[in-house]
Length: 386
Ligand SMILES: Cc1ncc(COP(=O)(O)O)c(C=O)c1O
Image (cartoon, rainbow, N blue to C red; front, top):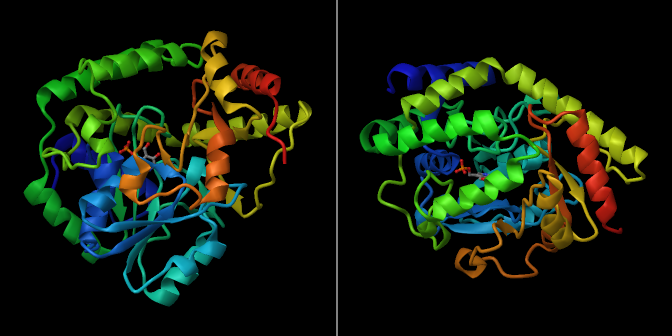
């Protein structure tokens, strides 16, 4: 059992979500690892996930010796195409990961039905979907467990950070056992550096400064001066000795402050989504319709542009906060995808989305003016055809 601020953060998060237990970790990927391990994922097992994700979401599967199996996405919500799910299930399938991409909820009824029929547990990747609902129920409450990320550009941030939530007592007990016996303590130097980075973030990072700050951050990460979101070995994929790390008290305190603001954060993101839809429609964009039974709370607003490379090249000089997720089916573009069992052509709908989609800010520091400037910018580039 964690102590002090960490325990309070875990309890408050579990209470907000309405689940039995929550366990805080250094990053979202560590939370995912803990859940998969507790579910017994190992050599010769297969884990199904969408072929439109971050490679850090595939690493825990590889670390456990299992094989990732990629399902293509559907083009509106960028989530797993449930029509393709069942054909990917084999006797080796151990877990299905339902990733709520950008904050759009997956088709949970269909996923739970198919998984139930085959007796396979569903784990929800909620790293991009804090507060999203499917048929009135919060994402993160459908599967046996869910995991969350509190990295810089996630729904709320503790610098870096993650949470595993479980509604199944037995599973929670298994996670707790690793947590108690094996969790590595965050080094004080990294915790202090992260605290400084959080202050810099609070004071200086706004939609107009993000592009410059991001390139500085990447440069400083390479020099080893700041606590980066990923290390080089994570792209190989090699599990670092200190991978299974807990969260620091400072991160937990930052998380507790954010939990108090969740409802405001969620409401703001709903409003930003509405604004983007209106402004894009006014600017002549064809805005895809999301089914009424979904209540997405978007971490970023995705749009398909005619020339993604040009958009990425021009955004910084125009002070536009443009996101590139996902640059390839296993983001980022540098990922050696063959090492992860992904080969070109496996997920064509995803590959097209990777070529076309950029994303725009919805976070609490973005406002109507941000949305207008962002839409003006992407309108200069133009909407992808078809
Ligand atoms: C969909 C998704 N899942 C999981 C992760 C891993 O989260 P973290 O960076 O906190 O390990 C990411 C990271 O960006 C992500 O985009």
